[in-house]
Length: 114
Image 1: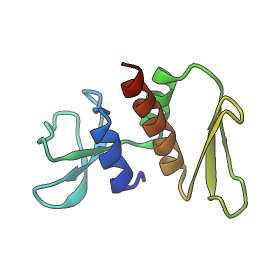
Image 2: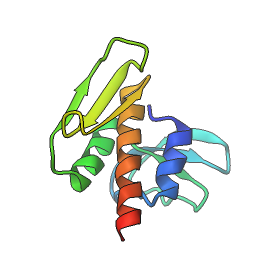
Image 3: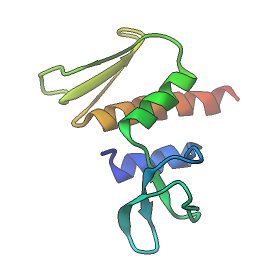
Protein backbone atom coordinates (compact mmCIF):
# COMPACT_ATOMS: atom_id res chain seq x y z
CA UNK A 1 0.00 0.00 0.00
CA UNK A 2 1.17 3.54 -0.76
CA UNK A 3 2.40 5.33 2.35
CA UNK A 4 0.07 7.93 3.84
CA UNK A 5 2.88 10.52 3.77
CA UNK A 6 3.34 10.07 0.02
CA UNK A 7 -0.43 10.03 -0.58
CA UNK A 8 -0.68 13.41 1.19
CA UNK A 9 2.09 14.82 -1.02
CA UNK A 10 0.28 13.58 -4.13
CA UNK A 11 -2.93 15.23 -2.95
CA UNK A 12 -1.06 18.49 -2.27
CA UNK A 13 0.32 18.29 -5.83
CA UNK A 14 -3.18 18.11 -7.27
CA UNK A 15 -3.90 14.39 -7.64
CA UNK A 16 -7.59 13.61 -7.24
CA UNK A 17 -9.41 10.27 -7.28
CA UNK A 18 -11.32 9.17 -10.33
CA UNK A 19 -15.06 9.02 -9.77
CA UNK A 20 -16.55 5.58 -9.54
CA UNK A 21 -13.44 3.73 -8.29
CA UNK A 22 -13.30 1.63 -5.17
CA UNK A 23 -10.29 2.89 -3.25
CA UNK A 24 -8.52 3.30 0.02
CA UNK A 25 -8.90 6.63 1.82
CA UNK A 26 -7.42 7.96 5.00
CA UNK A 27 -10.50 9.31 6.74
CA UNK A 28 -9.45 12.29 8.83
CA UNK A 29 -12.50 12.24 11.08
CA UNK A 30 -11.64 8.78 12.46
CA UNK A 31 -7.88 8.84 11.67
CA UNK A 32 -8.06 5.50 9.87
CA UNK A 33 -7.35 4.10 6.43
CA UNK A 34 -10.53 2.55 5.07
CA UNK A 35 -11.64 0.77 1.92
CA UNK A 36 -14.54 2.79 0.51
CA UNK A 37 -16.95 2.19 -2.32
CA UNK A 38 -17.47 4.44 -5.36
CA UNK A 39 -20.39 6.35 -3.85
CA UNK A 40 -18.22 7.71 -1.02
CA UNK A 41 -17.82 11.49 -1.15
CA UNK A 42 -14.49 12.37 0.48
CA UNK A 43 -14.29 15.31 2.87
CA UNK A 44 -11.66 18.00 2.24
CA UNK A 45 -9.31 16.53 4.86
CA UNK A 46 -9.60 12.93 3.60
CA UNK A 47 -6.70 11.58 1.54
CA UNK A 48 -7.00 9.18 -1.40
CA UNK A 49 -4.49 6.32 -1.22
CA UNK A 50 -4.31 4.99 -4.79
CA UNK A 51 -3.73 1.32 -5.50
CA UNK A 52 -0.76 0.29 -7.66
CA UNK A 53 -2.92 -0.03 -10.79
CA UNK A 54 -4.30 3.47 -10.19
CA UNK A 55 -0.81 4.91 -9.68
CA UNK A 56 0.47 3.34 -12.89
CA UNK A 57 -2.61 4.56 -14.76
CA UNK A 58 -1.96 8.12 -13.54
CA UNK A 59 1.70 7.84 -14.61
CA UNK A 60 0.67 6.62 -18.07
CA UNK A 61 -1.68 9.61 -18.47
CA UNK A 62 1.27 11.96 -17.96
CA UNK A 63 4.21 10.07 -19.45
CA UNK A 64 4.26 8.43 -22.87
CA UNK A 65 7.79 6.97 -22.75
CA UNK A 66 8.87 3.59 -21.48
CA UNK A 67 8.26 2.62 -17.86
CA UNK A 68 10.42 -0.10 -16.32
CA UNK A 69 9.78 -1.80 -12.99
CA UNK A 70 12.41 -3.98 -11.35
CA UNK A 71 13.88 -5.21 -8.10
CA UNK A 72 17.43 -3.75 -7.89
CA UNK A 73 18.50 -6.12 -5.08
CA UNK A 74 20.80 -3.58 -3.49
CA UNK A 75 20.72 -0.96 -0.74
CA UNK A 76 18.84 1.66 -2.79
CA UNK A 77 15.45 0.04 -2.15
CA UNK A 78 13.55 -3.14 -2.80
CA UNK A 79 11.79 -1.72 -5.88
CA UNK A 80 12.59 0.71 -8.64
CA UNK A 81 10.63 2.39 -11.40
CA UNK A 82 12.40 4.17 -14.20
CA UNK A 83 10.92 6.51 -16.73
CA UNK A 84 12.66 6.38 -20.08
CA UNK A 85 15.30 3.81 -19.18
CA UNK A 86 17.83 5.61 -17.04
CA UNK A 87 16.27 9.06 -17.58
CA UNK A 88 14.78 9.17 -14.07
CA UNK A 89 14.77 6.34 -11.52
CA UNK A 90 12.73 6.13 -8.28
CA UNK A 91 13.63 3.68 -5.49
CA UNK A 92 11.47 2.63 -2.54
CA UNK A 93 10.79 -0.27 -0.20
CA UNK A 94 7.39 -0.89 -1.81
CA UNK A 95 6.40 -0.87 -5.44
CA UNK A 96 3.52 1.49 -4.60
CA UNK A 97 5.91 4.04 -3.06
CA UNK A 98 8.27 3.81 -6.06
CA UNK A 99 5.29 4.48 -8.36
CA UNK A 100 4.08 7.25 -6.02
CA UNK A 101 7.48 8.95 -6.15
CA UNK A 102 7.47 8.77 -9.96
CA UNK A 103 3.95 10.21 -10.13
CA UNK A 104 4.81 12.97 -7.66
CA UNK A 105 7.79 13.95 -9.81
CA UNK A 106 5.54 14.09 -12.90
CA UNK A 107 2.92 16.19 -11.08
CA UNK A 108 5.58 18.61 -9.84
CA UNK A 109 6.93 18.97 -13.40
CA UNK A 110 3.38 19.69 -14.64
CA UNK A 111 2.93 22.48 -12.08
CA UNK A 112 6.26 24.09 -13.02
CA UNK A 113 5.42 23.98 -16.75
CA UNK A 114 1.94 25.54 -16.32
